[in-house]
Length: 313
Ligand code: TXA
Ligand code: MG
Image (cartoon, rainbow, N blue to C red; front, side):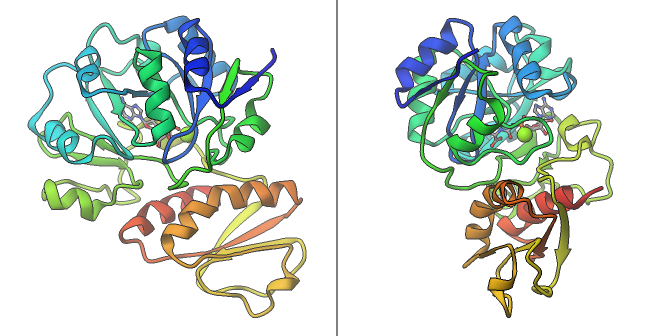
């Protein structure tokens, strides 16, 4: 299959409406979309990514009125999060309508709904005219793509169309919040922070790292976000070596002695850089990547979550 590159949201949407897979930019990471109500096309997403089919997909919308196509009786908590954070880098898990195909939700009775804030994403989703099921546009297990080139590296020849956009602003994925029970639970830390969520829903829970949440968010079962290199978490910049790389907030003593270095000005800049850095390390044949740990508050919570997963054996 030939993968068409385009800048036109309308052209990309025409591919999607014709039953094809289309990758597109968002403010978090790039997504790989299919018409959410076309079960056959959605199945192709799993094949293109080598993704296990029990891992459910997020459904992306352009307009709030599309929620009614997907969700059954929204809870007050779900409505509160929609009011405060849509459009934005958050996904809410709600009870699904029977019409939403099982392949989208991994057979669960719930569906993840997200309305991106990114302009090109909005133009694309609007032109699609249907809700779009989309995981991150990487091969399964690889770091999520934050540039169209990263998508191209992973999926060229496996998808019909790639809508080119700018580099993803956030660089980490959306926050996933389960709103199906009395107390909402954060299933995946993300760009909307726990502090921001608590400001509008004080009782919201964030499971401890050792709490079994796998049954509720199947995606958290898998090793994730990983480069080919070994990833180690460190408190301070380590000794340099040309086959190793370092990313963190503090500058190393001898930056030139590393194979690659990314010194980040802030936690936001670190998050923006991380997945792209992992991919650059792989391209450069780096064997070990040292990542400086950060305070697990604010966006640091999502960043540490991704670092732990990348470092997991
Ligand atoms: O920022 C993002 O969320 C990006 C962009 C493209 O929107 N998408 C993304 O999708 O990261 P994906 O498939 O890579 O991650 C979705 C996560 C997975 O951990 C999945 O298990 C979880 O959300 N999820 C999706 N639907 C769910 C559901 N109904 N119940 C529980 N977890 C769900
Ligand atoms: Mg993903």
